[in-house]
Image (cartoon, rainbow, N blue to C red; front, top):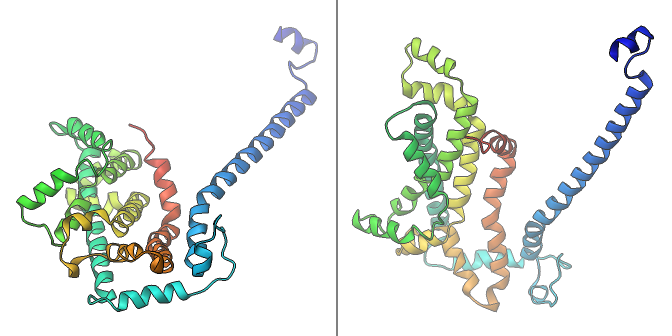
Length: 305
């Protein structure tokens, strides 16, 4: 059939037909893109609603906090809630700066230790084969199925046995053992690091430790920046762990201390709303700084392998 068409001086598809087909596909593609953008905009709007409402509530006067039905946006914004919050914290016999120091210490050391340990373990799982490696990694993936509440009792017993309850270590050590970070970074290394690069480094005399920190880690920068965000967020806003493992008032974290304000009843509702906003701000700021790397990690860690 094609030979007959060629001899007759005609192509199987005319240029006009090809232009019309491309035009129809472009038309469909433009409509498809518009629908996708609209759908994502709607999802983004609904996801942003809790944040917008929290910001609005933090600046509502006391009379607007108890309106029914509640008003979404503040009508008469005020800073009184912030003033009440800091006045309450300053009247405590443990200064506000102490709670802030505890939170920063636990979050920074826990995050740094988590990234260090996870990077070494992820490299071993991603680029080395050793006896039981597949079994151990499957156990790590299996552990992702369980909530932290499930492991709370065994963790408490272990900490009691090694005598680290009511210390900073009781909050820092569990952070370093998060299995989600190991899973993400291992998947990232498998896809971003080629074996030839590592072999060339070994031929040049680089040690495994030097390979990890001078070659692998710069290549997987989006991965470990994402780990910093996730680890810091979980540690900064954690109230349950300090409540279980910390009894000394001087060792308590800022979110734990501020949670007591929200238990003060109607008189503390404004301060509680301001407290919620302040606790949310640091993770949000870190996310704004690292958002491009987070998106890259979610694409590359992929849920492959």
